[in-house]
Length: 314
Image 1 (cartoon, rainbow, N blue to C red):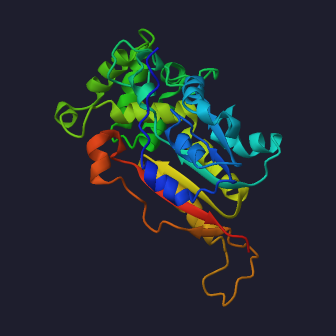
Image 2 (image 1 turned 90 degrees about the vertical axis):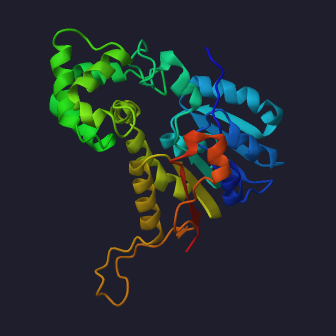
Image 3 (image 1 turned 90 degrees about the horizontal axis):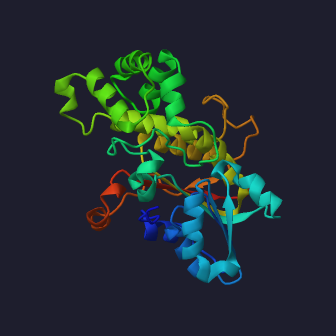
C-alpha cells in the first residue's frame, strides 16, 4: 500500500479562521492524512480534538502523525454526517470549532486499487471511501437504470453528454460487465463526439466525479451535516468548510445563508412573525481561495474554496 499522502489545502487560512483556544473542543470531520488536525492539536493544552474519517487507511495514517498529541486526540471511524451522535456518545455536546475538507486525498486518487482515478486503466471500479460499505461504482455502473445513470452524470458531474454516456454504458454491459476504469474510459470515449473530447480536460473526468459522489453519498452527507454542526458549536464557535466543486460550494453557501437568516416571512411584513432565529453569522461573504504561492506548490488546490460560519447565541 502506498503512503497516505494528502497536502492540506488552505491550511493557514483554516487555522486562522478557527481561532483555536488551548482548552477548546475541536472536530475534524475529514481527517485524511491529518495535516489540518496536526496544526490544531499543536495548539491544544487541556483541549481535545476529535478526528473523523470513514477511510480506515486515513485513520491509520493520521493516528501515526498525531501520535505526539495522543493525550489530546480521539480518532473515530465514522462519516462526518454522524458527528453529532458520535460526540454525544462521548459526552460532548458543544464544540469550539469544526473543520471539513471535502477534497479526495492524493492517496485515494493515486492508489490504483481504490478505483478513484480514470488514469489507471486496469483499476477496479470501486471508489468507496469506507470500504466496509456495500455500494461501489462497479455496482452503480452495472445495475442502475439508464435514466438513473444519466441523472447522476448530469447532476453530480454536470456532464453535458450524460444521456449518451448512460446509453452507451447500458448497451456495453449487456455484452459483458464493466469491470475496470479502462472499460469505462473506452465507453465514455465512444459516447462523446471526437471534437468535444479534445477540449475541457480528460473526457472521463466528470463521469468519475459523479460516480464517486453517488458511491459515497457525498452531497447527502453534507446536507445532513451542516445544520447539525452549526448546532454543535458553542457561542463564538466556528465551522470551516473547504469545497472543491460547485455543487458542494453551492450547498454550503445556501445552508450558511439560511442559518444566518432563517426568516420565512414575506418580504412585505414589517416585522418577523415566523419565530425563526438566526444561528449566527457568515464570516466569509466571498469564499477564501488559495494563494498563488500555494497553487504553485499544490495544483490540486486549484478549485478549493473555504467558507466560514460563526455561531452566535440569540
